[in-house]
Amino acid sequence: MTLGEILSGVRLKQPIPPELAIAQIEGLEYDSRRVGRNFLFFAFPGSRADGRQFVQDAVARGAMAVASESEAPGPGDGTPTVPWIQVEHGRQALALASRNFYGKPDERLGLTAITGTNGKTTTSYLVDSVLRAAGHTTALIGTIEYHLAGRVLPAVNTTPESLELIRLFSELERAGGTHATMEVSSHALALGRVYGLQFHTAVFTNLTRDHLDFHGTMDAYFAAKEMLFAGAGGPPPAFAVLNRDDEYSRRIKVHPQTRVLWYGLGQDPDLRARHISSGFQGLRFTVQVGKLRFAVESPLIGKINVYNILAACGTALSYGLSPEIIARGIAQLRAVPGRFEQVSEGQPFVVVVDYAHTDDALRNVIAVARGLNPKRVITLFGCGGDRDRTKRPLMGQAAAEASDFVVLTSDNPRSEDPLAIMNDALVGIRRKDVPHLVEPDRATAIARALKEAREGDIVILAGKGHEPYQVLKDKTIPFDDRAVASEVLRGYGFRKTQ
Image (cartoon, rainbow, N blue to C red; front, side, top):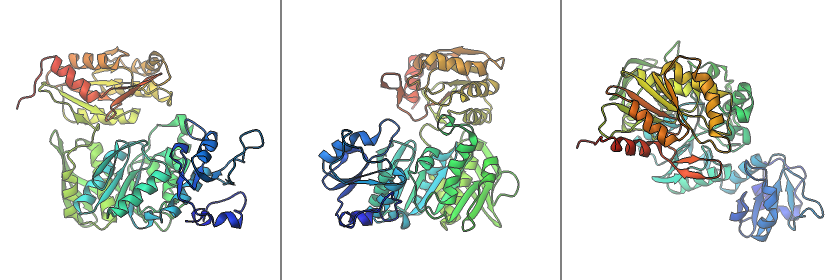
């Protein structure tokens, strides 16, 4: 494909010379280590490094040209020996170029984008399960891992860079796939990772305080999420599936061409849950859509999953799937890794691991536990380092006001002092008169939380969920709450019965 064809639709600072526009390009890259002969290299600032620092490496590996939103370096500053194309926005340019290079597979696939603060992962797993129950070959892209036509791939980001996304879509299409479901983070929207994509259905779960270290304000956070429903550089989605009970959801300005399906438990949703039965065995309820009613059963637990299931039902209906297929797909999803995931070694109390890492998510997961009528709820949590500091006391207060016993520990401290992080959270805990202990070593903290538990209690290990690592100042170490809890329980003498 020629350079001119690849950059069609990309906003340029200067036109491409005709002789350059007809040059044949063999590939695209923004990581110089993966550049090959006759590639177009995109050099834009990243979260950890500036791609412009690696231009000479990209050229040495065979890059034919460089695209960047910055001006070309001058004499003495590493002037490139290949053409330098200045674009208006580096990541948006990469997104449009990737679509052109791979033949715009998003226009032929049924793409579902799920955004919001909480519930994205579970909703995406539910949607994918329903699509597979309908016989479709699918892709699933999100926080835990990527699924591609039956293969499981590691997840680098919740929403990968546009180039990886389009490659995944192209590979899915070659494998005979028809639908892709993806979590779309506020970072991805703000940075342009999904710029120009054509989504069939966009889903909004809810919005609560998170990522203010990146966005600065709740208004900016919401504005990033709302971009998805305006089109985010592409056409607006054909359908929007929105949470009627969420304040921010009701504020979304939906494009006139988009059909809206509201879901919820309050006033006037299009999709409503009736006759809800909830317990340790899961959920049962009736979905009402106008005059249509159908029963669903799910092994997932708690009221928050009623919302997630309704969102998945609305998405499935946007694709014209039948109630029978929807119910089968909902039932087939047995669990979501790290989302109220039980750890059982034969102990007489319940231990669950959950990814809850905001104050609202903590309240939700504790509410799910309360709904199971335990004797006590013991909540272990920590706050991540190098992230929004203002949410730490709010998380402490959320844990303290809803739990019977709180264990404050460390959770991916990164470059910060774990004790300083914990002191921020401790301010919130002390607003409530709840028994608590502070232990910076997470493994020791888990052991102490489980030692505290008695028959009939529920212990929540919150914050890390599916993560199999702990990010420290100078290294990342293997650490999985589920594995640690199992080892501790066995050490206390508990054993599973066959």
